[in-house]
Image (cartoon, rainbow, N blue to C red; front, side, top):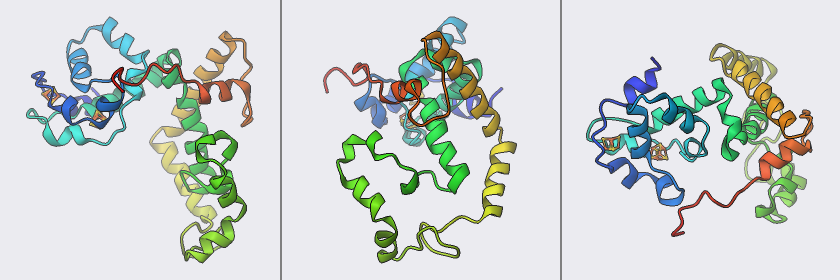
Length: 229
Ligand code: SF4
Ligand code: SF4
């Protein structure tokens, strides 16, 4: 059994404390108490529906639920295990938020492997972040001057913020991704995403402006928030 199920769920008593403290539950149509109950039911149909749903992708993994549960449960850990299962089974492509795992894999995962940073300004396409207005574009154009004025060492060898990460460190990072099976999970995400793209009439490529990737990245049914918001 996944250690996160063992550590995360020891007989939920449905008290709802986790839902009361959960920041995601106050914003999204999301209820960690309900998920704990559904997993505890051990009903294959219910759990499969969960793996295909948007629900498991709303959690912010903040682990606030760990701090208050009277049973010592951690719904956030249960969600992490469900996400992994959703990826391994390919069910993640059945939901809008699940399909966006492809964007996380390519943008964050790819950035870590390429540069050593989760997010690096030189790799940002600010056209994909209209919410930032012209600010990110300006920062990108003036990045070296701006970061160095703030005490950084932008894309240069040696110490300091925003420095170039040494090749041997990048190799070590890749090795960590390999032994933790993150790389094979990345392959799984690409494989199931390509199959889903094909079923929707797309031919998934690795380009940043790939039509399926853009569609997945920008999709928003508008049905995720709590109705009272
Ligand atoms: S706080 Fe703990 S016991 Fe209460 S509903 Fe959440 S997981 Fe169950
Ligand atoms: S880890 Fe997830 S379920 Fe737990 S409080 Fe944070 S957002 Fe809610």
